[in-house]
Each structure stands twice: as structure tokens, then as C-alpha cells.
Length: 299
Length: 309
Image (cartoon, rainbow over all chains, first blue to last red; front, side, top):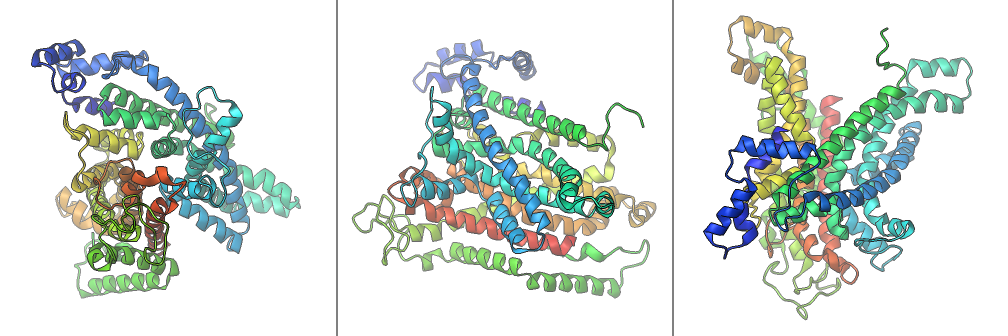
């Protein structure tokens, strides 16, 4: 919360911002007074916090409408895109990582690891340029639309088609990361005692893999996926700009451009909350799935 | 930061003075580390690519075939790559190849500076947290958690916007950009260094220094720091990759240098909407970013393998 307070300290003179250069100093003064701009900082912070907890992030500087009017639809749009990206990268990442681990040191392992890592370190918009040149811009393949647009009222199928490239651009960055963790987890599980025991007691290899190796390998992966959610939203900023998709990333950018601080704060706060809940969910999930972590039962 | 890579294998005896033997083994370890690095092909490829871009940045005036900023070649409009303009011309008739070469300068200024700031501050914070533990650790730790909850890019946008004053637009100088990215890097670096310092603080040599009555800053900087240097070097190479990633993304979001300066991220921002008819305008800067980022990460991987085994 300290961080949001510090964001609150920084804004300049909102009255001057909104009313423009030609406004009289008196008008600016009344406007600022109405906003509570002259109250001492802790008072303002308290008001903001009090309202924010109740889901009221204040009025936008530009048009006086509640911030949530713009925030909620944008969040839904970004959420859809993020979910799409996750659905693309999580299964492929895990499968890729497990395959790489099973063929450790062979060519396919190298290929998966190196491609994964290369994409993982590239900025999302660079992936987007490559994807768009390849698959949208007419040469060599023009399978997908170039920009996503607002997709207002579009059917699910249209949305999936239009959002495929943006989702892949985001997913590529996460793929390498997830594959790397899944690979490490699988290698660890393969060399674990319980795997050796299972093999020695004559269990078929497939069953060993299914029951002992993969289950254990997926645990750390889930925690990592959860912590990547916050990061995902950072990546969405560039991707949404690139594809002209009006999600929370675009909202942050436009709010920053015109110094619409209530909007900017609300967006950052929401992203922070999403990150915290995702991390918490990840912890709970890995605890629930891991037989060695038993909560609430004394041992 | 360039102290040495040797702290690795050295566990100084508690009260032995440090005669030549210790220094000898230090430089031997350092030589051994470098030898191992030079043997790793990924390291060499990474270094070659990074050196290439550094040369481009320093000698761009000599290398570029055309003026990257004030030229209007061909018909003054965009043109596909040809034998005279390898990467084509952009919509103002500027040579894309020249702009890609000259565009390396900005990011190679911002990223290392940001990394240095982040590593410096993060190391100090991490040492303090790891050495003192207790409530110092707790309070700083909470603040770090809060900052880490905001995605890096969003954090940078927030701070850069807030720093830009009231009425004018967003002003971003390379120095300011480097400081903001460096500040954003401080928490994760501090976390890593803290973990390393925690492992050291209860070792005999630290206890010995305490018993000798050394002051806390001395113990942190002269005793613990040399022993966590390998961790810091690995972190620095990883951070450098992230710094390039972040600086390029921010430039794309127009939080960077202003046009008409050639800069990879900015160039893509100016031209990505033309992809359907002028793909060469964005793909070459994109490939340049990709090559630099991947190269730095190859170096980071190799360094990590050698130093952490």
C-alpha cells in the first residue's frame, strides 16, 4: 500500500491539467479544491483508500465519470486475452518440458530448450512483429487479422481468430519459462528415490511416468505459472498497443499520456491485486496437490 | 563490480593474514573461470554478437552508408530492400540499414547503466538485509514485495509519468530512463543478494571479524561482499538481458528517445502499422533487438553454468 501512496504524492496540478492552459487561476483553484487537492496528504490518501476498498476509485480527471466505468470492460478484455494466452502456453510448455527432460541431452531437448529460452527473453512486441510479418501481413501466410480492434459484440469465434496472434505473442514469452521449470521438475522426479522404487518393483514405464514423475514435476510449474500472471499483465501493455486492443494495457498507456492519475492508480492497484491473488492461488494449489504439504493437520 | 570473479572458491581462514598465497589462488581461480568461459561456445557467440553491436554503437558514423536521420533517398518514400539499400527505405526515404546500425547506441547506453544502478543499490540493500536480519529485513522486505507486485513495465510507466512534471508531455532522458529501470531492478537484486548474504553471515570468518570488533559496514563490504561476488555477477548478466528487454519495450511505448533519433524500439513504434505493405521497416529493428537480447542471455547462461556449476 505504501507504493500506491507514493504514486499519490507525485501528481502535479490536476486543475491545470483538466481545464487547460487558458483557464483562469481562480477556476483552477476551485476545481482543485473540489478534488480535495489542498487537503494534507494523509487525509487524501485515507479518502482514496477508504473509497478504493469499496470499489470506488474516484472520478477520472478528464470527463468526471467514475474510473471503474472504463476499468471494468478493459479488465474483462485483458482477462480474456490473458486466459487465451495461458491456455496456449501452459499445456504446450508442460508437454515441451517433459519431452525435453525425457530426451535429456538429445537433439529434441536442445531444440526445445533453446527455442523456448530465445523466445522467453525477447520482448513481446518483437515476437509480435515477427508473427505479424509471417502470418498476418500477406506474406508468406495471411491467416489472421492484423489488428484486434475493439471486437465489440463479436462472436467467440471471431474473437479467438482476431486474438490468436496477440495471444501467441504473449504465450511465446511464457512458453520457454514454463518449459524450463517443467523440464527441471521432471529431471528431478526422474532421479528421485520413489521413481527408482516404482521402476524396481516392476511397474510399467508409462505408469511410472504418469503416476510418479509427471505429477511431481507439475507442482513447481503451477507455482511458477501463478507468479507469472503479474508479469503477463506487464507484457500485455505492449501487445495491446501493437494490436490496437483496448484492454487494461491501453488504458494504462492512455491514462499515463494525459496524466489521468486516478485512472492510472486504479489500474496499477488492480494489476497488483491480480498478482497477489494469483500468487496466493498458486500457493494454495501446489499445497493442495502436493501430498507432502498437508495444511491444518498436525503431524 | 569488476572486482573479480574469484571469490568463488575462496573460503578465507578465520584469522589467517592474507599473504601472497591467497592472492595467488585468487588470480588462479579467476584465470580458471575465464578459461572455462572461453571454452563455452554459447559464451563466445554471445560475446561476438554483443561486441558487434557495441562496435556499431561507437563507430556508427563510420559504418553507416547513409545518414540515418536527415536523408531522403530514392523517391523519398518507403522502398523494398534492394542491392543499394539492403534493408530498404522507410516512409521518409531513410535507409533502414543505417538506422538499425545507429539505433544500437541508445539502448547500449541505457541498459548497462540501468543494470549498474540496480546491481549497486540492490547489493547494498541485500547486504544490509542479510546481515542485520530482524526488523530491518522485515520492513525492507515488505516494501520489496509491494514493488514486485507491479509489473516492471507498468512500474516504469508510472514513475516516468509522475516525474514528467505537470503540463508538458512525457519527458524521458536516457539518464532518467536508466535510473528508473535501475530502481525497478533494485528489489529483485536485493532479494538475491540477501539470500546469498544470509548463507554467509553465520560462517566462521564473519564471526571472527565480529569478535575482532570490526564495524558492520566493514564486515559487509570487506568480508561478505567478496564472497557473494559470483552471485552478483550472475545476477548482473541476467539483469542486463532484462534491461535491454525493458528499455526496448519502453521505447516502443514511446517512453524513450524522441523521433527522429534512430532507436530500435522507437522505430518499430513508428512503423509497425505499415507491416502489411512495408514489412522491412519493422522487421529489421525487431531482429536487431532479438539478436542483442538472445546474445546477452547466452552470455548469462554460460556465466551461470561456470560460476554456479
